[in-house]
Length: 270
Length: 122
Length: 233
Image 1 (cartoon, each protein chain N blue to C red):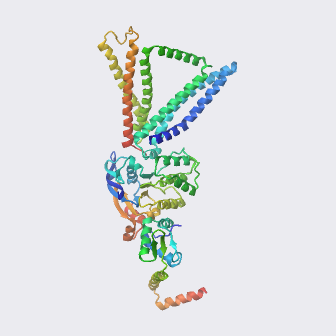
Image 2 (image 1 turned 30 degrees about the vertical axis):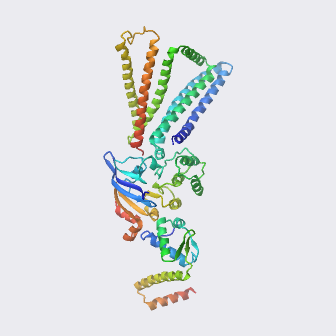
Image 3 (image 1 turned 135 degrees about the vertical axis):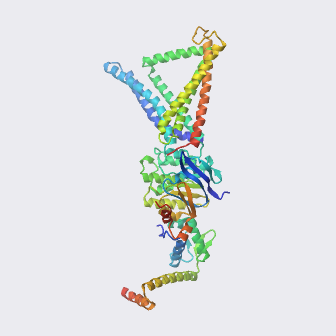
């Protein structure tokens, strides 16, 4: 059943994403062509415009993806389509899981598309060329220095989990919002603000507790004192990222179960 | 076309009347197969359970017989059909007689009226 | 083997201070076509939503074929809501595939046959169809399932008389002694000939449950007339 839900969710998302992908492709190619043409005054001007357009399109694609994800979720579960979705012979856990997985995969596809787009233009835009150059140098440094690996793993891990958590949190906000009879969307926005606030508080407390350990156990390393052997900061920092990564997982799971509960027991379709 | 029913009388009774009418007037000929319950229910636009009850009653009174795998058939007993026809006719006459009596006609007046109307039609 | 496909035991539903259903209890046997009748706001829709797991009762419980309302019962119940609930951006064909995917008891041939009879183009998007045709598609999808319980909320409300006849005939034609149909409607005179029983609901309470023929025999009235009497404003 989950497979079937995924199939249809991907179909629905793709339908909306394809427009974004098409526009991205078109503008990338157009910009590339403009950049390849021999320079003259007119083209300098249009290249400037294209540059601005390109940035707008990139931002539009990224925000658009987020918008599609949440709007599709809302439409499919909280509006009239909900009558179809929630009478399917599936559990609400499966419905939410399918939505989460499909939106995350599409997010990855969008990120890859944007990345590919920048790679296409890399050789013609100094800004991008320099950016990629420094990224490559950094990666090279990291690869050769084994001590940095735990930090990189934990940072990448945490960032990924944080992205997943953000999406889950948005869904939970919709689930909370729909319990309100009259102002579903407004309540959803309020719920999201609340979730964000709670997340920040929890994170703040966790980070504080983490930082406290240095003060308690090792009075040589005061928080503001950076005269520390370089090897210890990455090690300590990776510990932090692992911890907040775990916190995000716990919060994410809590959000998932809350969302499931709200859709199973507190569904409020009208 | 859905059959015409009076909504304040049981459908079952009305179905029976209509089926008897169809059999006695030869719409369903003796020995012929009558449509299945579902088909009749759809044609009449009535509940299949009600139609089923009516058809069972037709079996009970002998106008219809059920042959297990082939379905329901009108009886071949033309006499029985004739008797049913007569009963229906008698019922109609009774109704006519009572209505005419209410209007104040006696038997002689009724008969001469019938004869006169027949002559007018020729 | 369950004799009663739908059992409702002391079901109550409260929204804040408003009591939508009060201790409603009744059951419906197999092979019956039942009319759920009552004015707007009487609780009919609430009861239907409860039976479909879209709401949870404040008290009491509902069992479909002996099972409490949940994932398993959703595969046994074919529900037609009162509104357009299909993904309007999908084509008719895609919607048929969707139903076939999720419901084992769904018959594609039946669906396409009915769509053909009503001259509905399978390639059209639902958003392009007229409201009447959209409602017909919804009904066709629901009736193409071989379910134990069909719950139809106002199935003939928005369609023309010819379509109404088609819909009623489809309901009759779909009849099986193993299946039960519960129809919630205001258009009583159109529907009463196909009903076995009626259930009257008023202000969240069960007023009566009786078979149609008995009502006509005993009171000499049509269900429509009885309804007007019982629910006089």
